[in-house]
Image (tube, rainbow, N blue to C red; front, side, top):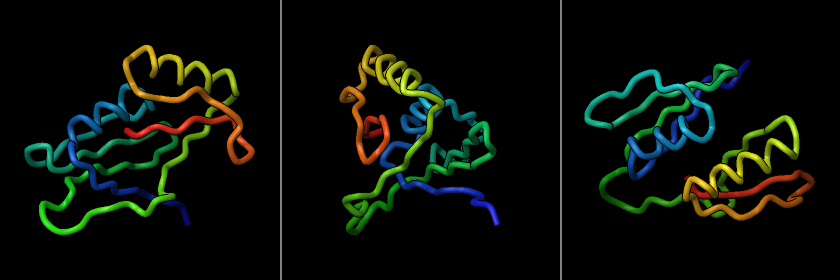
Length: 107
């Protein structure tokens, strides 16, 4: 069995799609509706669906929820973080975290 896709409800489908394309190397396959659902794919074949958050009712991610991406080296992690910071994203410098050289940010 192989993980086929992940569907993330987001407040702004178009902006989040652009983030995943620009910074994380995803390819946009199609958008349905008026930016209601975007389908992206990474180089390994994982499909990422970005859908609109519900309009009503409580919506929250569990506090430790996150998505992790693996890069080939600490230098690649530092390079991506530097490019993101230079691009105006609020991102802390990478550091050893839970046994990995990493950084966290909100897309």
